[in-house]
Length: 320
Image (tube, rainbow, N blue to C red; front, side, top):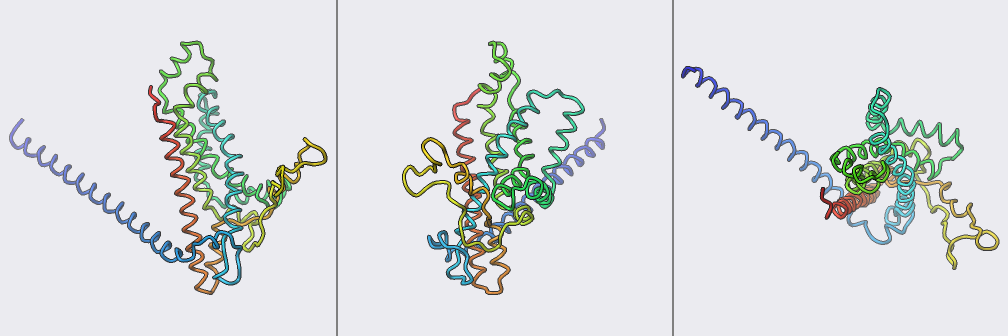
């Protein structure tokens, strides 16, 4: 190889190194700018609303007077809807992911289902709201209730839970499955005793990510009829006196209607309450909206923190 060719190769290598360094610097700058903008927005919101956050803010209903308005009905409605969403989406999503990854045959039908589940994760949330309006509200006559809202958001996060579950199961080495089979375990014993314990942390993370997305959604719950002004709470399933659980007639017949009456209650959620306050002409309500946004971010961060902690706890001590 001639000296001229060596110089050409060296120049090409140096040029590529320079391009890589420039690309790395540009990428770092873009990330820092995005983080700075995000932190600036969060700081502005927190600084604008921190003065309104107090115990009274959490225990007061919305009001036409900004100084007396609170988020009592909004955070209770959000919490109940998230409960219904988790109870509906987690069992179905995790079970579907386990079936598609461990039981279903790898054929065109499985590929078709996988592609569609992946695509559903990117469908605009308003589409789920329109689907829920026709199915849950009108066809199944569930009304504009907490149950309808919870099932709607469950449909919204179901693709996320399914895809996350499949990825978590796929990350488990095959030799762990083969070792379980070698010891005489059935397929379900292999999944329950060996695969799920190692993948549970990742599955839980996916579930929390889905719930974190659902907690801030507005379009689906607006479509099915969430209220913008509500000064009451859903019916409590628990009595204020002993034995607290409602019974019908003599023990042990539970009053099922009272126990689940809260599912049929009308509702509002935190994002809608924030939108309502921002839409008001009085500037005093902007501080209320900022305070509600701060609470919503805190709830989201708390959910993600719980996911990180539980993931660490379940993964601690697990070795393959």
